[in-house]
Image 1 (cartoon, one colour):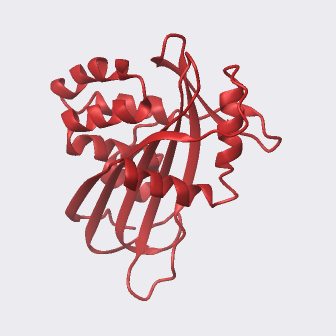
Image 2 (image 1 turned 45 degrees about the horizontal axis):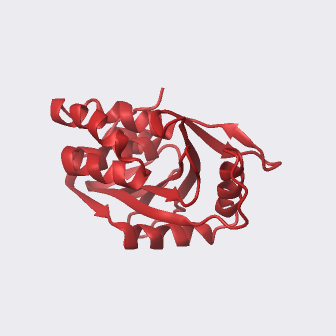
Length: 222
């Protein structure tokens, strides 16, 4: 029976605008993620006709955990000594009364010495605010094979649910941060109030209830 990992060290970090933009630029170079296409289609869905869509602001949360000894991930067969997760947020420029944001998640199990290298798992979604910049009613989308928007698994909803378990102060701040408008500003506000728990929630969302990472960060998808 595969043992559960025992965490001996945890670290979290905030990625401010410049650092987060670099991460987004790296993701944009991956043709499989189709970020430029997702941006264009998402902005068009709110009635904005622009030739090029640019990131206006960005922010990110990182989490990393080291194990006491290598553990085998039964889903991949890898012998893993460390796990890291990242959740990136961006707002797009010139999107009118219904702001459009981007959310990217990544998880990376770091193989123990001598193990085969693992591939980072990355996903990207667009988030379209409700009327009046209402992020409580935001709609989350992915691109299908034909380039159309389709309803996607709720990274945003899962993140907010997880923050609700970070304590009364964090839960109260959610209502105060949401009216800030731009998605990165909202997350920066939440990170300032929720602290380490915000990064842990980002890891939970990126994990998507996988065996190895849910033992560390929990399972917040339903």
